[in-house]
Length: 545
Ligand code: GCB
Image 1 (cartoon, rainbow, N blue to C red):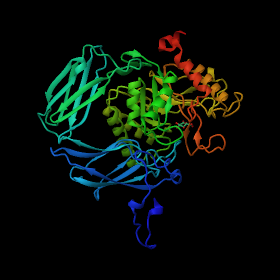
Image 2: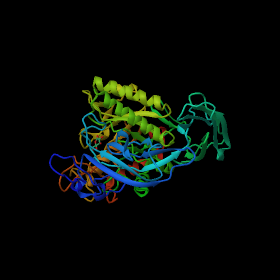
Image 3: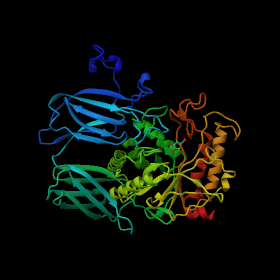
Image 4: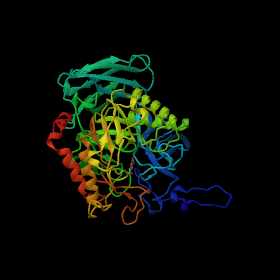
């Protein structure tokens, strides 16, 4: 902290005394740990000493960060080891030749200054938490380790064919590879080719597919040379056909809810307890799907959702105004996309990569997002691509989606705030004409209410008004062709500096179905009833009702 820095005289450099400095918990944002840092935006230096014993068998050592918001410069034992831009995705640096036996030190400069050219940029509706928000780990690995791998159930047919591929860090041929799923009696042995990769298929006859009703995970073992790993993996397929989303070949309706990565009352999520609380709230609504808005959430959230049977929409913070002409901005979008996909590529529950939220179409924006969508598809062709688009009101009195990106996405998703920001005369009977033969998801709708505030349906901020908005929207949904999922905004009230209204917002966006203390608002009951209705299981049943 600045107050511990000593200024010898006005023209001398600041000399920072880490030993006298205040401390912060890692992982954790700084904003909720010290009162004076609640609004802080800028640089903060972290230092930590640690004892280490170097591996004797030639293993390499890496320092891994879950996420540092929004930028990090990392130093070890007096040397700079790297820089990372992007506040929500993991990164790592090799420190084999820098870390030593005995006492070491690591220094991190975290900076959460919002920038016009950043992803996200300057304006967004959530708290700009700064710091080392996720875990930091030292990891030792064999000298040629498995740098990336995946195992996906092949689409089409019901024959349990699993595609497996891996890439070693160094391009070395003839490294022996073994893969097995003991519970399925499936195994494979082979050797890497000259570029250090191997791709093969195995066939699992009795495979139980992962689904929300039965989130089955198998222990998978993989080794390549010295490197051995095991992981719990689920197998499922996800695809679209016409206006429907097919999970394991069967049409599914995504009963979703949007969630921010925020602990109750504020601060980034760091504990399993916080993760499980959100999951249990989502499950209590009858959800089988969550939209993890507006940036990649803590990895534990995705993994626990996988165990709990919740499908996931994951997105990068490409939000509102973006510096579309800036090549560094594009590079940051692409690297965040890569890191997001890289981290969760083996998670069966992740079915949608979303590349943007509410961005206004223009020539430059369209080019930028087309390129990004194509990049996403080239990085992962097994999942669906989407983005939250904007709604257009046509002169003939109908609502539609007009966005050139419709050709690039698998799912047309849009945010509509009927009854809150937008006031159609008759919401339940609003007419929608979306001219694409693709599934449609409502990625946001809703309105604000202060928990415990009661009144009539016209009293803004009352639970009754929020409930009325939900009732009217839910009635309207039946008339939207190809509707394959809904995501109310949002599970919990969350902190946002854009929400200052005293006595009402007090720094919180109040569109939550739950208040920070966990109490449920009336609108939650509307959503639960909508999701739990027996006849609502498939689209066919919905159309027949
Ligand atoms: C939106 C944004 C979301 C906001 C929400 C609101 O359209 O996507 O991030 O928080 O509206 O409450 O205005």
